[in-house]
Amino acid sequence: MSRLTPLPIDQHEALAERFAFFEQTLGFVPNSLLTMQRKPKLVDAFIQFSAAVYDPDGEVDLGFKRLVAHVASSAAGCQYCKAHTAVSAKRHGIPVEKLEDVWNYRESPHYSEAERVALDFAL
Image 1 (cartoon, one colour):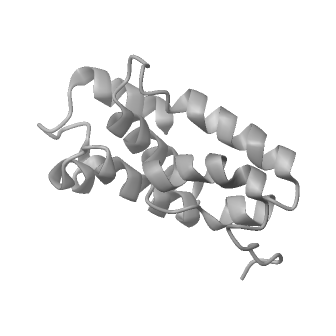
Image 2 (cartoon, rainbow, N blue to C red):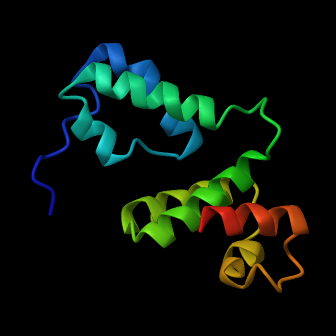
């Protein structure tokens, strides 16, 4: 149970556009952001950081970025992040079979050598 209750999504009108980014990419606004909005500048900075990491004009596929985040979250033991990144990876085109085989990536035919290197790094 969290120590702080997430605030309503419409608590700060100025954050509506920022929250739309997460609704678009994840399908929802994470409770962590709804809780963080007690400090709106913190939400703004976090969202700018996330937008830079998940820039669709980047060289790495958006779905694969989220798959790497899923592996890193799992390795760190963060069940909260693990759930979000798995959902997001699927939403961004990672096939279910590939996601289900992620812990066998070193031998799996679903993964390229470059992807194996990235997932090794995530661990």
